[in-house]
Each structure stands twice: as structure tokens, then as C-alpha cells.
Length: 135
Image (cartoon, rainbow, N blue to C red; front, side):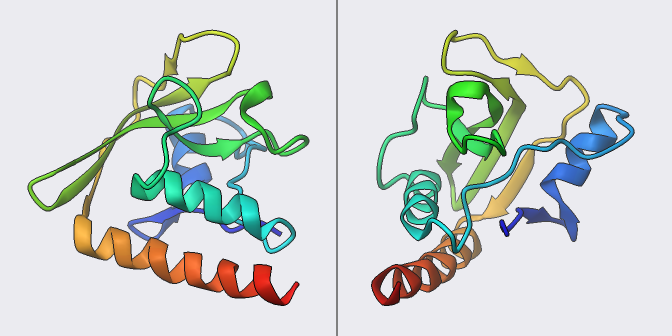
């Protein structure tokens, strides 16, 4: 089981399916899983800016569902914080072998209230941290 990112009431994977006019959602998944709480905390910390992103300063949102790493590729975004807002822009497909991003041309930019964004991620982080200690 993995948690998905929801924006405006819709899963990120659904957004990608619509943007790419695909028959189904991509298989890629977040690392937000109770099976590996340490990975969930790491992904959250990267999205909060507490630790650097894996490759080329792009935020990894979804990873290969088979290996759970960026090696096989996944969905990334440029993440920036400014004036009380957090922006996910330039959403596209990346892998760790090249520095080229295949941007989804029809992808929207997502803008979040920074306080709500951080609180949501911190709440999720606390849940995974408790699970990590008790597991």
C-alpha cells in the first residue's frame, strides 16, 4: 500500500493519466508506504527541503513501483518556495542516468499555501515516524 498525492481532490497519478491522455494511470508510486517508513520520511524531508533531492535538484514525486528507486525513472517536478507559496512546476519524467527531463507538456503547475503544505507533510511524517519506531 502506498499513499498518493492528491491535488484539488484528484490523485497525482490521475492528473498524469489525463495530461498524457493515457488509458490508465502510471504504475509509478510515491515512497509513502508503511512497509518502508524510513523511505517515506526521506521523501517527505526532501519535499520539505530538509535534505537535498536525489538528482538535479528536482523533487521526485513518484518512483518505479518495482524497485522503489529513481534508477528506473519516475515523475519529478521543479519545487520552489517563495512568498508563502510552494510551487510544483515542470512536471515530467526523469531517470537517474541522464539529466534530461521529459516534461509533460500539458501538465499544470501546482501552487500550494506554504503553511498548509508543510503542515500536511509534517503530519504525514509524524505518522511514519511513529510507525518506524514501533515497527
